[in-house]
Length: 277
Image (cartoon, rainbow, N blue to C red; front, side):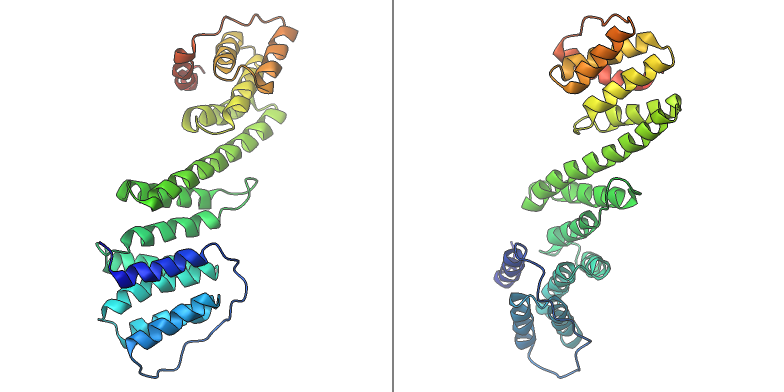
């Protein structure tokens, strides 16, 4: 069970999480003036209340500097990480959270420390049109939260964010696949679209990926593969514009659209698409 003081500290952080990141006062390292640990810690909490994230982080660090072996230091390490996160200083936030994990792997705050690392990576994901290395890091960190603390509130939020990251990664594969398709590099395009279908089955990009596979297979004369993929598309996404486009494309080329398999078999066929070509 978490201590009362720790719950109080995290409650303060959670309440602040919904506020804007405005009014941050930047602060240099504090001059060393020895004071009772409770005073420093409470001053840091007041700085959080004022959205003075950098000052709060410095004050929490001061708790660790002046009272490194106190229970307050352990809590302050995590709250410093949170303050850096609110300041958008993700590097320091991750470093502080990872320090906590290294020193207190079984501490009350370990679930939150892992979660904080994950959301730092998540918040840095850039747009789908650029390199997705950050998305991969976020996915790894989020998966670690759900694997280590599956029953926690952090895991539930991590699962939601994981879905968002996977959609982002699938979107990147689609962008590259469309690029290859436009250039007439059909084999490279097929590999990208198959990856979306087989690795990101729950994302919003699957219907288009299936249609693009139909388009690609028809372009290189693989009618049978195009028919099988179109059948999967029709079974799983019958009311989508992508199915309509595939149907029209095949009809326009005089290719018969086979009877779609039953819904239960649909995703089994999706799993087999990777082996079609």
